Image (cartoon, rainbow, N blue to C red; front, top):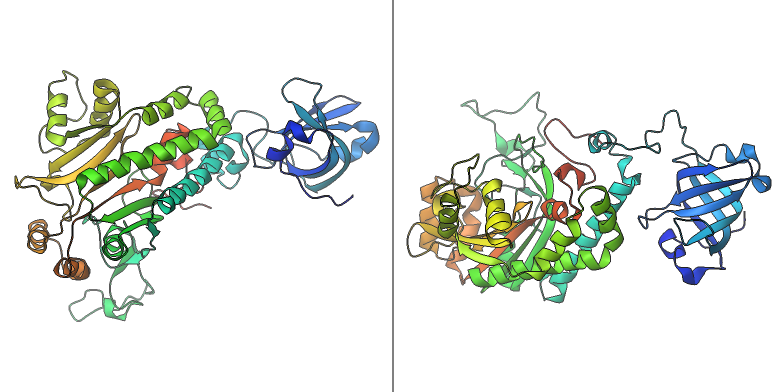
Length: 465
């Protein structure tokens, strides 16, 4: 077989290439035909669209073509021509072919038929080859790139915060412990407790739940930073909205107040969704056709509307006076549930909403306290179909007030002494937020289960692949 430089299928589908001799490589999606000619649809992952290869039986012989079944991988040399049939604009007339790998139809799970998303989760090692997950994971790449581009173009620095940490940024508890101990022979102190001084780091450590605390340190020296990396929660939550391992984007900016923070969050989200509409058009159209026909309009809805901004108290009042029956009762002091958030966005305002000034009791210790002594300068961005997509706040920069909140919440100061110390040395106003990447991916793809927007989901009792 002649050596030719490979052409990606995304490029081969361009009408400008008609008449060229090209090489394509990819995996067979379907094969049909008759005793004279076979039509093989090939995809290489570069686009949602397949490229049709026309194979004359006389040229290759039936025995050679027999292993070309769904899932097989091929290299094809041929001429790109305008297609005579329906469904495609161009096709390749095969001149030479090489079969790299076969896929036995009796055992290959991805035959040409409908597969449920639940079934595909069980074969996550193969599901990227499907149209659905090819589209989702291409979009995941584009969104990752857009995040870096957004912050880079605005003077933010990408700051790498630790995966292994001794602190719990959220004060929430549920963390994965990191140890080098042999768990069948854990060293103990005289009182019978675990002797962490003999562990690898000489202390108790965990996988991070957030890079925020370390990110604040970066902001207070570099001015504006963002983190983008994996975070971990050991919550036993088997829901379509929770993962044990997920990715977070967390900008932190010195000299920002809550209003600057809201402006950044709104601009950031609109940029990302606009980027998806411009760069993922074919994949969005496919996902809309297959799963959620309202997806394109919902994405445009966010880009085209200013976000409503109101206080938590105002939001609670609207919910209480709505006459709507909620599964979870709502009143001042309750942590709003997804149903409450979505009501405000989808039914009342019909626009994205940013809620601010939450009761301090339901928010983290590091949030700046308001003068009323009851609320903090927190902000949650609420989206249609998702509910909360971003959570953030202006941070408490006053040493005495921060210490007071640490004591009120009963937190152990030892793991975060360094964080509190920064309020003694050149303290300044600053703010930031966290965007769960998979929540964003749910929104831009229209999928309904968070396990379907990450290649290998980690959930309770599931660390397969």
